[in-house]
Length: 361
Image (cartoon, rainbow, N blue to C red; front, side, top):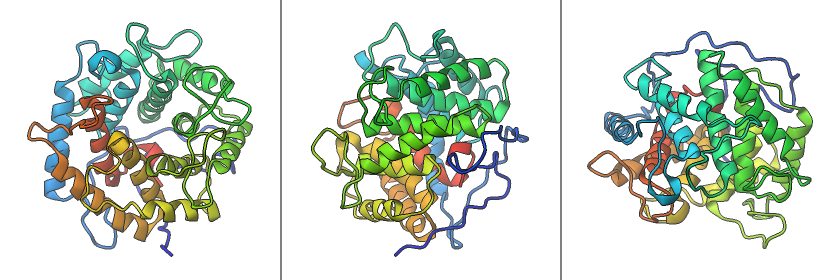
């Protein structure tokens, strides 16, 4: 059995409290919006090596070069000007310590922030009207998460009212099972969309936006019901109950985001994920490779010393080998787009920086 790591971290941007165990008062404001770069070490092991940092720097430079003039990220017929990809790309720069108007990529983050704010409808829905998209609630969840992180880091007054509406839309579209689906209506639910919403709610809660405890509790119930006896998670309650690595990683993170930090469901979920410890076989789960590892690295980061100490070096080395000469990461599945892959890879590699409030233990 793997041991859990203590979650305390000095110099954290925000204190992270349990959503389901504490009162709904506002979190303390951020006092340091542009922290110095630092690397978290585990058991004396340097996690972000010089080679890793070069990969991160090259990845961020490649990503910045692909930002559209309007501040958006994304390419192709479906994911051009995509709010989810824009939010994830923005978070990749936040993870390196760049905030709107500050740092080497401060202008990039500023433009991404302004783009998403301009896509907020009066009812709170964040969507690009001109573009096609698959599952607009994915986009809404990732965009809301990014705006909550920016607001927590900067306390920009123009963000809060739109963020509050975005959060209210999530709360009001939760279905009777406790989850969310592709569209902003309380009908169906699936685990993949649900984890996007609970992470957005957690980030909003961390920076002082009101989130009802009942919403979190209902979501927790849905996620728990989605877990199979092997520790993995199914996609929907109404479908066949196969477990799979990508959505199981998402299921574990959903529990952490709901304030669940220990218990049999987490232990079983983490043990299931450890069966998929990266072994250099980089083409496993190709269609959901970046999605799965984005959540898996978060799960291991929150889980503890031995989980994390084994997982991060394995996925770090795999991603460094996978990077293309131009600094991006390939989309061999051709499902989403280059910007998505590169943002996800940068987020995974930068997890030890511990800058983003949503990722802090």
